[in-house]
Length: 489
Ligand SMILES: *[C@@H]1O[C@H](CO)[C@@H](O)[C@H](O)[C@H]1NC(C)=O
Ligand SMILES: *[C@@H]1O[C@H](CO)[C@@H](O)[C@H](O)[C@H]1NC(C)=O
Ligand SMILES: *[C@@H]1O[C@H](CO)[C@@H](O)[C@H](O)[C@H]1NC(C)=O
Ligand SMILES: *[C@@H]1O[C@H](CO)[C@@H](O)[C@H](O)[C@H]1NC(C)=O
Image (cartoon, rainbow, N blue to C red; front, side, top):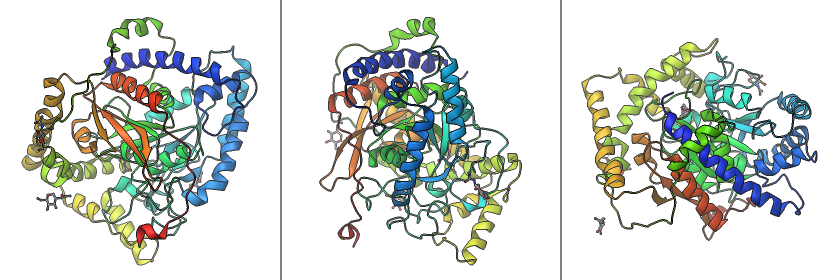
């Protein structure tokens, strides 16, 4: 196991959170339960008292998807086996002794469409080029979710190829997800559920939108540079971008194993921690390790250190200058080709095939006018020569001289920044970050706050994010404010 230390620390933190949320639960028990905005703990409580079944829960979400998805387009595919999985979960719950099932047992989850599932669902990164491809097996994180008893409800829409195809395509646009529409900012394509014309950000937009709009309990997204943190910020949900390597990337359509990471997008910090625990392989019954790791939880109040500067931040924030862009296009070709080769069957087997496919599709005048300039640049790369190796060294140095030095010299636990602007700083170092809803602007468009830190600092970040969430309780469900033409014209 590459990261035993942070995993151990999770155990503690989440059992702390469990206690906290159970305390709140008894207080809210008198309220009438509503699936909308329900946390997984509240849902489990309903299960436990035979007031709700997984089947009812899945039916509720299928109805909501039916009603809302034509407006927000967060979901590309619904799992035809979801009700069957729910039925199975209900049977298992009846047969089990109370409390012996995982926290995600019987809970529906949506997955970003670049996370492989070996079932009836397609895995396409939003592209028609991969429609009909057959993956060799479930992604590592999906195996863990199934083991935990979660119900795979479907796949969520995303920036096609996680935005790595072209800079001209708007956030949330994918050929498959746009259902033939050319523009993101028009009804029928992926929309911010708070203000339909507002930027949903990308690339895990569908996951963020779907939990925000209560079309599912919890979801997974992925991030190479900002793809969890930014849509979480823009759609008023909690996203955790884990330290690179904490969650398995196997079976996830890659851009760069140096930066790619899989993480939860949920409505609350506690739910995000539960999902994270399940995908990092957490065993809730490991009481001994839990006790042992308790020393990692910080005590006492926070000291705020203001007005700090990350050295060379201007360079880091410009991916052309930092070299991040060159590293990513070089890595993408290598790893997407490896992914495509492993597929059981696939219409495309290499980046060159995808490019040819997109050219052909454009010729047929299908939903495709954004070009593919990043693909074309990536195709011209040729692995890691001297220049590329130097770029990687430089990125490492920028991280060491930048965030690492700042955090160590000032003895910081977390770096607090508005929105998701900090994403590249975290991305190039493989560092974790958590976004929590922080408010809404005058037009009602959400924004978040980000807590970032060094590798393995998730336990501290989670504690801080949880405190912020509980102190502010600012999140509210979306109202689907109609498209405001004044905003764009
Ligand atoms: C997967 O794609 C195929 C088309 O290749 C389609 O027929 C099928 O319905 C899709 N699966 C789901 C679950 O939507
Ligand atoms: C999908 O997954 C990776 C995580 O491994 C993510 O960082 C990336 O943005 C996504 N890639 C594509 C091509 O969709
Ligand atoms: C950070 O940069 C700003 C603007 O360049 C400057 O005013 C401030 O004094 C710097 N802070 C520190 C701690 O160096
Ligand atoms: C990044 O730097 C390049 C080269 O200096 C410049 O041309 C480009 O406009 C910069 N990009 C952004 C987003 O500032």
